[in-house]
Length: 282
Image (cartoon, rainbow, N blue to C red):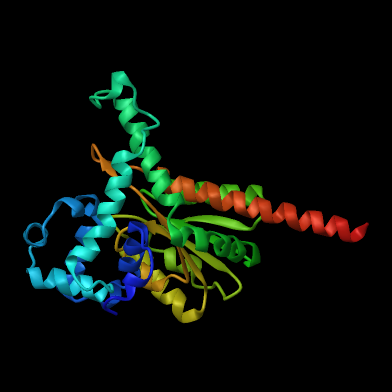
C-alpha cells in the first residue's frame, strides 16, 4: 500500500474516511493513533512525529506503521495533507467574524462559526456525497422503516421518522435504550429497513441489534459521528455526522443537516417520479 497515495491528490477528508474504513485492520497501537487523528487532525500540521507519538502514548514506529498502512511512505507525506488543509483554512476569509468578534468573546458568533464548520464538514464529506442518494433509494424501496435512537439521539430519530411520515413513507420511531427493543425489530425482513442513530457514547444495545439484523438479512442504515464508531462494521450504508463537544454539550447540527439533506433528496425523487408518471399518462 505504500506510495499509492502519491498518485492522486488527497484531501484531509479523504484520509479521515480512509482511516474509518480501515479501522478493523488496525493494530491496538494504530487504533490509538487513528482515534487521536480523527479527533485532533487540526493539530497534525504543528506536531513533529515525536510530539505526536508522545501525545498519543505510542512509539514513533507506531506512527510510521500507521502512515504506511494508509499508503504513505513516511510521516511527512501524511502530515502534508493536513498542512494543506490548515493553510486553506487559515487563508480563507471568515464569513462570520467582524471587528467586534475578533476576540471570540461573543458567544453567539463563536457558536455560529462552530456550527457552520460542523455543517460544512458534514456536507462536503466524500462518503456522504456518495452515500446520500443510495440512502434515499434504500428508504424509498423499503416496505417498513424503523428509525431507532437512544437517550441523546432519539429526538433526532423522531424528527427523521416524522419527516418520512409527512412524505407518506411508513416510518416508526423507536427508543432503543429499553429491554424490549430487540422484540420490536426482530420480525423485520430484507424488505424492511432499520435506521440506527448512535453517537458518542455509543449504545451497546444498538450495536448488538445491528449484529443480529445482519444475521437475518435486514438492511441497516447508520447515522453516526465522523470518528471511529464501533457500529460501522455492521451497517450496510453509513452517513457521517460531524460534531463537536463544547461546554459539556454535543452539537447535533451535523446530524440535523444529514436528516434535512436526506429528506430533501427523497422529496426530489418523489417529485421526479410524479412528473414522469403524469408525463406517461399524457
